[in-house]
Image 1 (cartoon, rainbow, N blue to C red):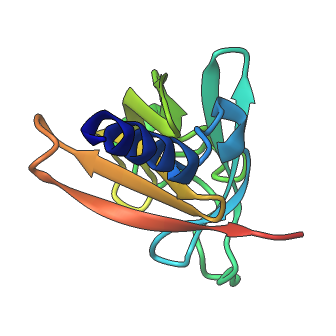
Image 2 (cartoon, helix red, strand yellow):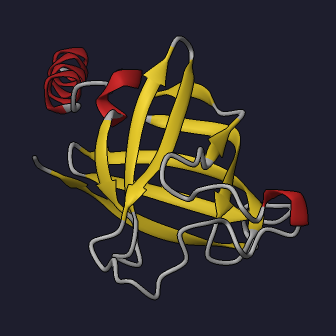
Length: 144
């Protein structure tokens, strides 16, 4: 009787477990956590790419180039189309780690990990050194 209960409990856990995410589930257009950036995320081979599409808050006074970059040679590069992710690897179950994210608002690059919470929610954790010292943003998927 006891083993039958264990088998039933295991079956319930297997059936109730959500579908494991695939790497491409993260693809789409995302609104950054501060509501200021529209980011295109796509998978290119085994890498994840994120480029700036623009901002829902665009105005004429807004910088069009990477003015806060610490490298003076890069301050004239356009923000539109700028790649902000690098070096990530897919860990499975909607999680990416080992990468970096560039923040054009500060001109800084942070270690980063990503977690797809559900189809429309992406947690982006930027940090310095260890993940405990950092900040998490929740990005929301945008529909066309």
